[in-house]
Length: 185
View 1 (spheres, rainbow, N blue to C red):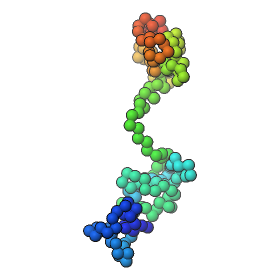
View 2 (view 1 turned 180 degrees about the horizontal axis):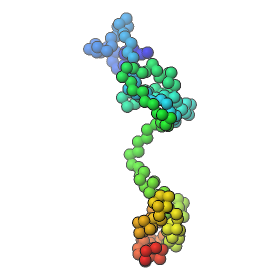
View 3 (view 1 turned 180 degrees about the vertical axis):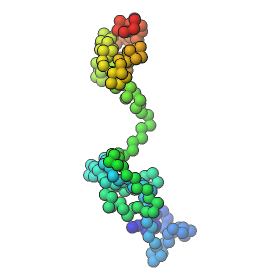
View 4 (view 1 turned 90 degrees about the horizontal axis):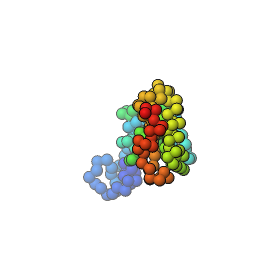
């Protein structure tokens, strides 16, 4: 248990501040302040990404920040009358990741269309390879995703990653290059 003075000292507060009701500088009058969590998560796999302690049984959170990680027994002293205990019901909890500029939609989209990236990320380095890739993709069975081939569903063959400025001699795709592979001529 930490005293209010100890908490403020950790935060670099001025020990001589006389107007605070929460602390006093007189060591005989200092009082204990119980730190409590707003929420305690437990009941699932908790992955910490800490090499020394890769998993935990519980996580205590206060004001949106992790207060403590450990066993449920260790974190019981952080549970107060207003603490919400959240049962993960066997689900996995991982640290939060904030991505300021993500293209998550494109990750999903890329997994269901022809990969037209040039090497080293793909294998489309010329127009013939591009046409072959699109032709091959049109024959790919995507019925588990759409119930039919994508070209039948959308009336076109979908691809992602073509780089007209890459290794294809600055060829922009136009009708004359794509028409030979189109199922809807």
